[in-house]
Length: 350
Image (cartoon, rainbow, N blue to C red; front, top):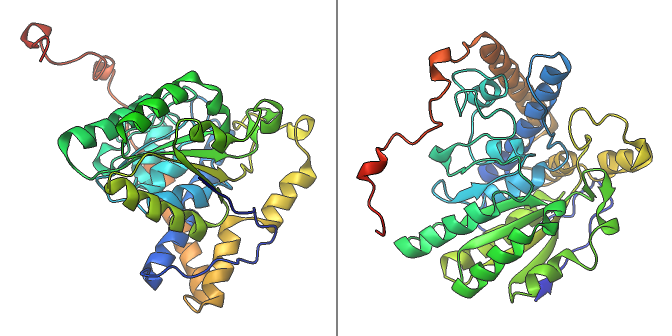
């Protein structure tokens, strides 16, 4: 069973109000999208000013995916993320200060500065971690869903990955297991049109949703630039997972505004400036949702401008905090590298 929606071609939203959602919930979704965009803008500047070690991969343009999905989850529900994972972290409840500290390798970061941009984890909010390995978290997500089943709890796990990761054999191994055991997991494929520097259609034969359908998994395609469409579908599938009807697969059609990574500045050889401008001018998820909020009377332009200003200040303060924060002491070099439990005390075979 495949449910498909066409990608919108206008920044004027055609979204409809969702039954049961309040004005506060709509505004929270908008706030979270703007928080992600501001985080990425600042992360990019930190990299360009040579204050951040390593590379980073911007999530700008894809905000409606992370927010639409994560707003359908409980705090105890879990996610696994990707190397382009800042948006997922923010959407699942991570705070600016600890995230910027992690990017700058500071002691107060989520992983005490050892994970960096591509390895942020926040288990206090069910974020099992970003992963620099393409498709590397697919097994983690499926194992997490198996845990829910074995413990008899109704927690759901969402596995985020890009379209390029559909070439990884691990995806098909875990989808087979999830389908056989009816696990409460949602495989969320963020199809931004490119696998690194190559168009998706040049490396992926057939449709992406068909890959899940081959295992008897219900697959859906949705406009990833429409936060309400993403959230509506996600809420339905999460509830079905809680009722032991999983797993599910979603292909979210979206677009990354930056290159594959921050150093990918000469993109003309694989995509045009006109294409980038079209997505930004006509399909931006934040502009679209802002317009919808005003049209529906949930907020005025002045109120949204004030909210945007507040979030920008929040990000600015968090960056200053992270820059002033201390680095880990050298004595921590092997902390969290080795298991602290004495292997002699471990029981073999249960």
